Image (cartoon, rainbow, N blue to C red; front, side):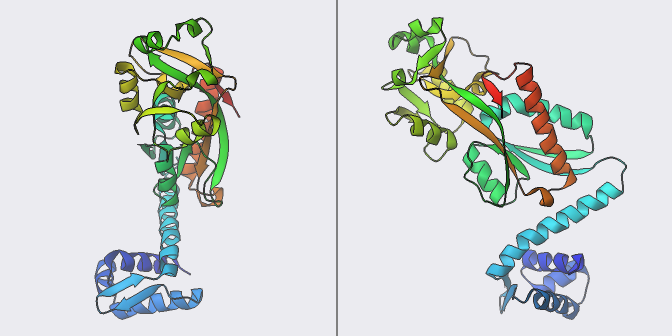
Length: 308
């Protein structure tokens, strides 16, 4: 199997036609057809379905397409690396909003210092969305809050975070929570009945909370950290979030109580394609993520987070 065959196959699928692909690759149509026939013979399976309207990938072709695109991407990165004495390439990384609020800037800063020739694409999205992006190979690595991923992916626990009840002054007065501010702790049973703004049920944080407490009074479902915290700052609701969620908030008059009896801890997992599939740029990015988290926790810059 040759890279030329992979490029031909990918181009045919993208163009939807052997003739159009031949024009783009500047080769003869018959030569291109022979390449695909040889590839299908080597794999002992049909990759393309031919019809009067063009060609479409078979189920086997779709599975092969993802891997072929990955191989071609890594081959291009290998060429770039060989042409430079410094590590070069491209890496796409996903952070959930709460983690991004504390980790994104240090991560980008260290990547720029250590690997100035690596282009970084940083995506901020909810944990559930990041899993989908990893599954579709639109991201090389991401931080998520669940172990429920494809068994072929690499998964490493990074840090655990304690959960806090967050509410404004009026909320704390209305629900007589001010007495807890002296200790900064709130037993989980005291959360029952309090109106909350939380992410919707298909996201990891909500699932974690409902595993611990089945009687949550969810007044608003808000899938967006900034909007959710604005609601908490201005409405008669509180939320349950990790310490990283309020690290960079400039709002005044928000109160924070750590949940106890029992405490609720959320684990940050670093997931990626398997190590043998990752490019050097992606491996470098994973190393920087781990380094950043270690430094933030050791410097007490990440409240109530513990290394795992």
